[in-house]
Length: 220
Image 1: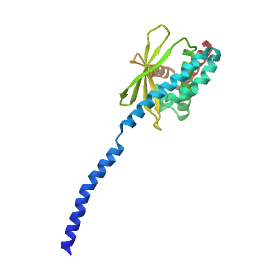
Image 2: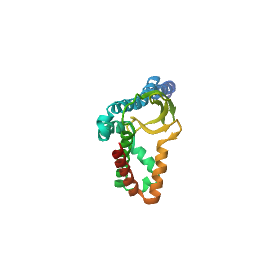
Image 3: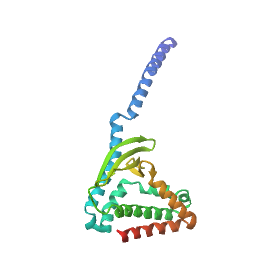
Image 4: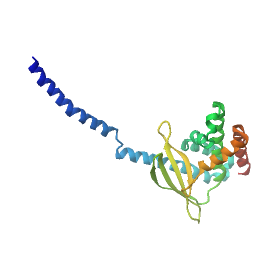
């Protein structure tokens, strides 16, 4: 009986030695990102910026008729969809975020989001022949840096790069904008916000963001 068992056990071991590595290789191949998956991710990052540009340009063409409030209403869903505003608010506030109460954090996100929309509504008031071009993208450890050109009429292009990373649901969203490929808008905001927090505290920053939105509305 023992003589019969030994060849059977040996045969099973040989089978396992062959099939387990093969199954591991198959699983590894299945989990590895394919060329199509990588291309789709890159396209999604570009599409995020391109879709935002499309709404921005359309709004600019109607900008004078819409006025500030009209531009704000039209841009709000596009900005909220394209930008990861809660994450950006958290980074811009800096270490003080961890000390804020849940209610303060919500107020900060709301104020920062409204301020961000108002910034675009006040800066891009009308269309004067500008062109928005998505030129390409570069891979980044955080996601992808989408390279774009904003070219005013009869002027040289302005280089604007967008850092796009997946949010909690895997949707590509903008987390920072770089002017001339080097000046981080989010880092600039963080320096401004932390200065206000150190001087006057978090409630003062929330009120300052609301006041800036009101000022932009009155000047546009």
